[in-house]
Image (tube, rainbow, N blue to C red; front, side, top):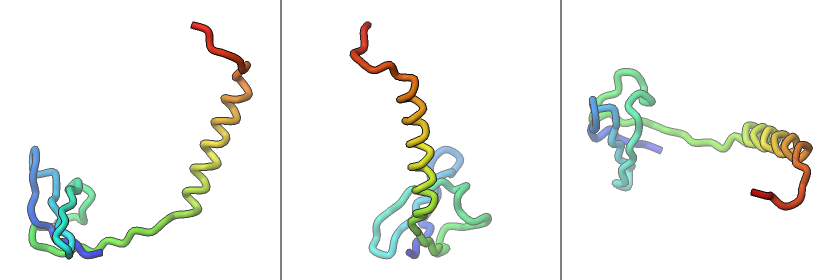
Length: 79
């Protein structure tokens, strides 16, 4: 995906306004841009699914649920 840096906005110009090739705008933290990036420059961004990391997160969440289930006596909650 190609994006152009249109301008910087916000407090201390910390938000970059990026424009896609079809004219949509994306607000992006300036500190996540390449160092020295300026208005008018074109950026290339590639997004990929990380299935291994997704599986790691699912395993960790499952472990937490299992740990909580072991401590839960079951039944109704009484207030």
